[in-house]
Image 1 (cartoon, rainbow, N blue to C red):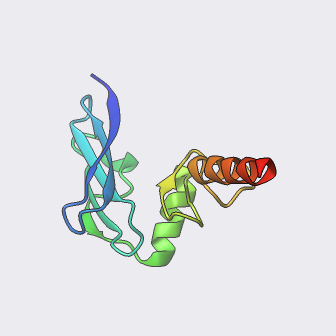
Image 2: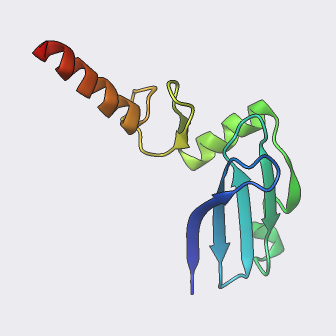
Length: 111
């Protein structure tokens, strides 16, 4: 019981989608993390109406997609394009790309 999050496949573009399920309110949210798709599906279940910000499905515009990322405190990696929350503050790249760059720099120093 409670809120669970995971990732699944976007039914519109096949990209990665963020899934939020809350068993207490019987609610489901799916948010495509591909900015070119931007598909979302929200079924607020039994959440009180005054707390519901969005219900239904549709597609976000690029600006709405950026707002969504800001609300979730996520970023899109400037190198690989992956949307995630694992970023070092002030860095435009995800931790994976930063680690790869550090490894490449270390490799260059050893040559």
